[in-house]
Image (cartoon, rainbow, N blue to C red; front, side):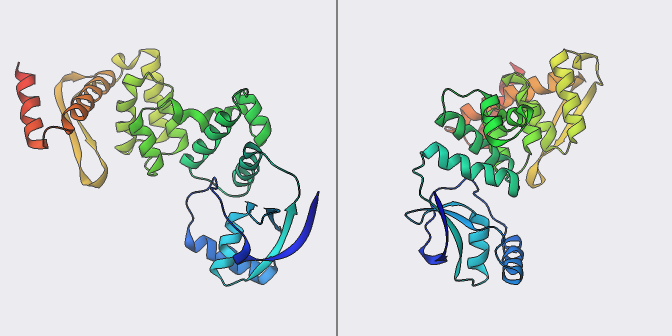
Length: 262
């Protein structure tokens, strides 16, 4: 059963929610709209006063000084999985989550329901199976791609394109995206790699990859294909990770130079 009532906002508790990031300007605009037109959709809380759904509205009202709001109190005893599903469903359909938050929310739901297949999650969230596949794709990506998604350097569709490659090829596609490649170019490079056709694609003797914070990586060698760039970057990344705990960058640079000569 449910009942509609009014509660003071400072009496409502918040536990872990799906959404992790909030933009203050957007919250303030939402809060001012609620001030002007009223709360069109009440918050959903448990009997103990813990918020189940409506965190953006809750935060927006606090930000503009609203002290109380209408809430729907549910008397139903909910499992952790049901609570998470309510939170995830509302955020998926009422406010854009980041790609990282979508991945984390969907992955958590699958872990909470070990008997589910992706089609079951799609049905529960009222999403297409393809969209659920995309949202879960970072789980098949290398750690560097997952971190780039978390930091907002790539989007969920980029992560999906990267996840479709073998792990050894993913670093090269990630580097291509971070260098400023469009989604179309990223998908084309992925198709070339999957089809084994990148060897017949454009070849260069010098590849300069722009990186974040003004850095760049230059690869020079006669007749470089995209597949060879991927292989070189992947191997270099592995070497750097192994050396990071023992050597500084100058020592590692010298070691790599000596290794190339040998």
